[in-house]
Length: 74
Image (cartoon, rainbow, N blue to C red; front, side, top):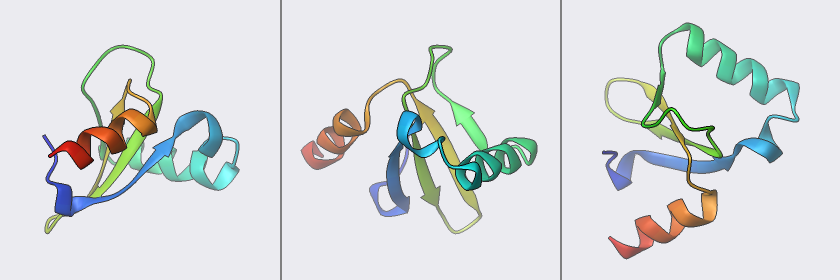
Protein backbone atom coordinates (compact mmCIF):
# COMPACT_ATOMS: atom_id res chain seq x y z
CA UNK A 1 0.00 0.00 0.00
CA UNK A 2 1.32 3.40 -1.00
CA UNK A 3 0.08 6.72 0.30
CA UNK A 4 -1.24 9.00 -2.45
CA UNK A 5 0.76 11.93 -1.11
CA UNK A 6 4.01 9.95 -1.54
CA UNK A 7 3.44 9.21 -5.25
CA UNK A 8 5.63 11.22 -7.60
CA UNK A 9 4.49 9.48 -10.76
CA UNK A 10 3.50 6.40 -12.70
CA UNK A 11 5.81 5.33 -15.51
CA UNK A 12 5.27 2.82 -18.31
CA UNK A 13 8.21 0.42 -18.44
CA UNK A 14 8.01 -0.10 -22.22
CA UNK A 15 8.32 3.62 -22.90
CA UNK A 16 10.72 4.69 -20.19
CA UNK A 17 13.28 1.89 -20.36
CA UNK A 18 14.24 2.83 -23.89
CA UNK A 19 16.33 5.57 -22.25
CA UNK A 20 19.70 4.55 -20.83
CA UNK A 21 19.18 7.15 -18.08
CA UNK A 22 16.04 5.39 -16.83
CA UNK A 23 17.66 1.96 -17.12
CA UNK A 24 20.62 3.19 -15.04
CA UNK A 25 18.26 4.78 -12.50
CA UNK A 26 16.32 1.53 -12.09
CA UNK A 27 19.51 -0.55 -11.90
CA UNK A 28 20.94 1.70 -9.18
CA UNK A 29 17.65 1.56 -7.28
CA UNK A 30 17.62 -2.23 -7.52
CA UNK A 31 21.24 -2.46 -6.37
CA UNK A 32 20.32 -0.32 -3.33
CA UNK A 33 17.22 -2.37 -2.47
CA UNK A 34 14.75 0.39 -3.29
CA UNK A 35 12.60 -1.64 -5.69
CA UNK A 36 9.73 -3.82 -4.56
CA UNK A 37 7.30 -5.90 -6.54
CA UNK A 38 3.84 -7.00 -5.48
CA UNK A 39 3.75 -9.83 -8.02
CA UNK A 40 5.96 -12.29 -9.83
CA UNK A 41 4.26 -11.33 -13.09
CA UNK A 42 6.06 -9.28 -15.72
CA UNK A 43 5.79 -5.63 -14.63
CA UNK A 44 4.18 -3.11 -16.97
CA UNK A 45 4.79 0.04 -14.93
CA UNK A 46 6.61 1.42 -11.96
CA UNK A 47 5.46 3.85 -9.31
CA UNK A 48 8.04 6.32 -8.05
CA UNK A 49 7.40 7.35 -4.45
CA UNK A 50 9.15 9.61 -2.00
CA UNK A 51 8.28 9.46 1.66
CA UNK A 52 9.93 10.96 4.71
CA UNK A 53 12.51 8.16 4.85
CA UNK A 54 13.59 7.58 1.25
CA UNK A 55 12.68 7.12 -2.38
CA UNK A 56 10.97 3.85 -3.30
CA UNK A 57 10.04 2.21 -6.57
CA UNK A 58 7.14 -0.22 -6.76
CA UNK A 59 6.77 -2.44 -9.82
CA UNK A 60 3.24 -3.15 -10.98
CA UNK A 61 1.70 -5.57 -13.43
CA UNK A 62 -1.01 -2.95 -14.02
CA UNK A 63 -0.74 -0.35 -16.76
CA UNK A 64 -0.15 3.30 -15.94
CA UNK A 65 -3.72 4.06 -17.02
CA UNK A 66 -5.10 1.49 -14.57
CA UNK A 67 -2.93 2.88 -11.76
CA UNK A 68 -4.09 6.44 -12.42
CA UNK A 69 -7.71 5.30 -12.50
CA UNK A 70 -7.32 3.53 -9.17
CA UNK A 71 -5.76 6.52 -7.45
CA UNK A 72 -8.53 8.79 -8.75
CA UNK A 73 -11.16 6.43 -7.31
CA UNK A 74 -9.80 6.83 -3.78
